[in-house]
Length: 181
Image 1 (cartoon, rainbow, N blue to C red):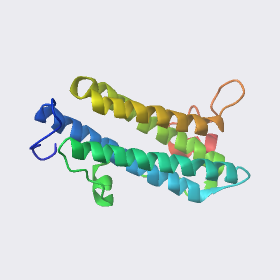
Image 2 (cartoon, one colour):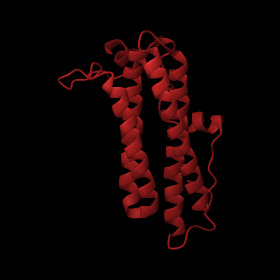
Image 3 (cartoon, rainbow, N blue to C red):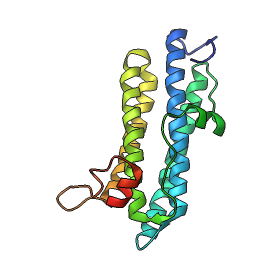
């Protein structure tokens, strides 16, 4: 829970604002982590699909970085103090670090699909939570979820067969997804 909120936006209860700030800090951590992971993949893709994947990821990095800024600014508008330091991100996250280093572009996309699944699932959960707390924040999260889902679709297009199956569809871990892709 953040420190006591001394002010917030008009019409929002300070306790509700504190709950939303806590929720948004988790989204801030996840989006910062995703932006770094996307850049890591961008630098470490190899193979015949290198240029397609390498160039596909830069707009995703830029889009996620814009989401980071929007979430941090929403935290501040609600009367909180967004924390964007690497130490706080690592300390607060509930997921493991991205596990694939230099590898084939399609292997990375298999693993990245699982990363997107986690981030989008948590965003959707936050959307449900904000339904009762703050519809303005919910609107922000809905917009971001839509964009994240499009990015995942771009990733999945490389993993999908003509009958709609994902080559990495049965994978439970990034390593499994990379191998199956």
